[in-house]
Structure formats: structure tokens, C-alpha cells
Amino acid sequence: MSQAPLACRPHNHDHCVDHALQDAEQRCSARGVRLTELRKRVLELVWQSHQPLGAYDILEQLSQQDGRRPGPPTVYRALDFLLEQGLVHRLASLNAFLGCTHPEHGGGGQFLICRQCRVAVELEHSATDQAIAQAAASVGFAVEQPMVEVLGLCARCQTREGA
Amino acid sequence: MSQAPLACRPHNHDHCVDHALQDAEQRCSARGVRLTELRKRVLELVWQSHQPLGAYDILEQLSQQDGRRPGPPTVYRALDFLLEQGLVHRLASLNAFLGCTHPEHGGGGQFLICRQCRVAVELEHSATDQAIAQAAASVGFAVEQPMVEVLGLCARCQTREGA
DNA sequence: AAAGTGATGTTATTCTATAACGATTCAGCC
DNA sequence: GGCTGAATCGTTATAGAATAACATCACTTT
Image (cartoon, rainbow over all chains, first blue to last red; front, side):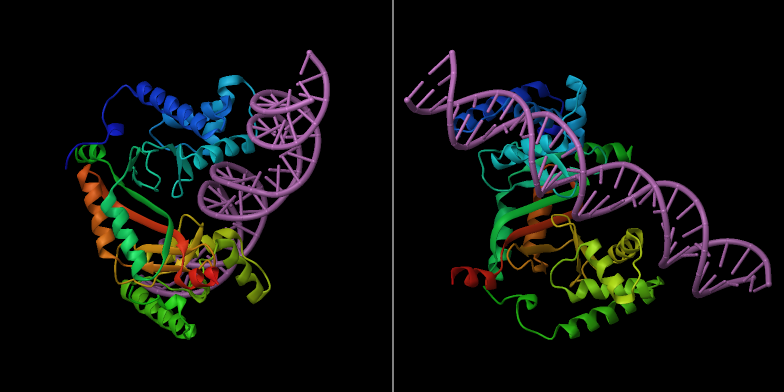
């Protein structure tokens, strides 16, 4: 066991958020797509939370920020854009969204979700990708979107629960 | 590539369903839980379809069978029971349910879901299980419920699409 | 039969997501 | 600047998935 993921260690998370936003701007301008103010705010909200955020949580926070609340489609459209650009992930098991920490890789990634503290961590574990590819190949299945979401207890919550 | 999964080959599916129902009865009586008429009907419906069924699909079929339709809770309770007993799986990416083909194994299993024909196949690929276990262990995460759902094209639909 | 437990029925509601349409904004061009 | 087409966002209504809360029924045990 090498080291706990960053999300589970104390750190100045504002730096992560800033870095993610800057990186997103670069990516979008490089691709000629527009990271509008709304999309940036949604991305920021998603990134600020280590716990995956539901679309209606985002809606709630947006409306607290500026008095009036947009409709759900406004948020879902922003999220759809961010998903297309690979800047956020959607966790099907939680109906929630999470900032993508590995936008340089195309693949789906794997997610470890703590049932206690609700923190979700993204991994890029190539052996898992390969195992899935092999399993699929063995029955002639062509993988398009692998999705791995593992529910359990993070390291920190294991020690807490034992205490 | 060894062989296409049974679900993708022609076969007398009634046999599968019958076998699954008998097996379920044995399991339930062995555990001292009741596989009631409703639960058995829901299990049968889920098994009859190789395509994962939504709870409201089940509701619809139940109401067609006997005129009057129960409420959603009735179906969800039956599904909860079947999930607890490991007789069906829930696919989070589809909000749908599928008969468990490997009830002897406790683990989650892996699901290959064809985006074309919507057939879902369950695998028990130990290398994938192990890879996930290793990935989790490397960050001190204790796995409880691994979930692998792979969207793609089944072998049959690949040849169809090429044609 | 009485009591207790588990299973089901029923109604209402919450949460998640999208359809459809109108209004606005933005980039490129005259 | 002003025009135009396309993308973005706002708004309303609705679909889809799941659960809360409470009433009723059935089955077992005594």
C-alpha cells in the first residue's frame, strides 16, 4: 500500500480547484469550445467537493450564490458539456458528478467511493483496464465505455471505524 | 476468444428460467426466507428477459398479467428481496435489473451491456476482481461492493453493424 | 381464536432527468 | 456599427426512478 490518495489527505484544495479550472480553460480553447461562465461555475462547484455532487445539489448552490435559481436543464446542459469534454465524470451508482483528475487519459477510470465519508477517488489502474479488456475479448465483446465503481471504506474511515 | 455467452446464442431460454426458479426456491428454503408468489413472478419476469428490465417494465408486465397494477413499492420490495438473496443484480448504469447467473459466487460480477441489442451478460472474471482488489489495496481502500458495467457492442451486433 | 410478524396494497411525495420552446448572447461578416 | 446564424441559456412542463408512511392482509405460533 503506497499512499493514501490526495483527496484523503489534508491539502490546500483551492490549489486543486484553481489548477483544474486553468487546465479546463486551456483544453477548451485548444479545442475551440467555450467554457462559459456558467460552465466554469459548475465545474468549480463540482471540483470544490471531494464528495460527488448531485445535479440538484449544484442547482442549490448556484441559486444560493445569486439569489435566483435556474431550472434543472441549465445545470444538466452544463454537466453534459463538461462530460463531453472529459472534465467531469458521472457516477452511475450515486447519480452524482465528480471532477476528473486525469483528463489527460481518455478512458473511464476507476472510482473508489467511501460509504462512510462519501469521498470518491479516481484511479487510473492499467491492470484493471487490461483485465476488463481481456474479459470482454474472451467473449468477443467490443468495449466502448468501461465503468468501475467500487463501494467500500477508505483508509481513513477504516481506522476511524475501528476506534 | 472462446465462445459467445449463452445469452447471445440461440437456446431454449425456458430451461434457463425454470432452472433459475428451482434454484431460487432451494436457496430460499435453505435460508428460511420465503420466495412468495409475487417474488417468484418478479424473478421469472426478470429472468425471461436477457435485456435488463426496469422496475416500471416489471410493473407493466405484472399489471398486464392480472388486470390491476400494484404500486411501485410492491415491485421494489420484491426486487430488494431478490437483491438481498443474490438472485438478481441491479445495473446502475441502466436503472434496471437482471437475473443473476452465478448465484453461487458472492461477488459482484462484471456486466457487458450491448448498446445495440441491449442484452447484458454477466461474467465472473477473477483476474478483473483481483485487479480491482489490488488497485484498492494500493491506496488502502477496503472493497465492499465492486461494480463493473461495460458498455459496448456484443459479438453478434459487431458483425451486424459491419454488414 | 388471539396475537404477532412478515408481506402486500395504497397514496403521496421525493429525487433524477429530459422535452419543447422562447429569449439571449456571441462570433463572424458586411 | 449593424446584421445574421449558431450556440447558449432561461422557463415551463413532464417523464422516469425510487421511497416514505400508513393501512390491510396472510400466515404462523400459541
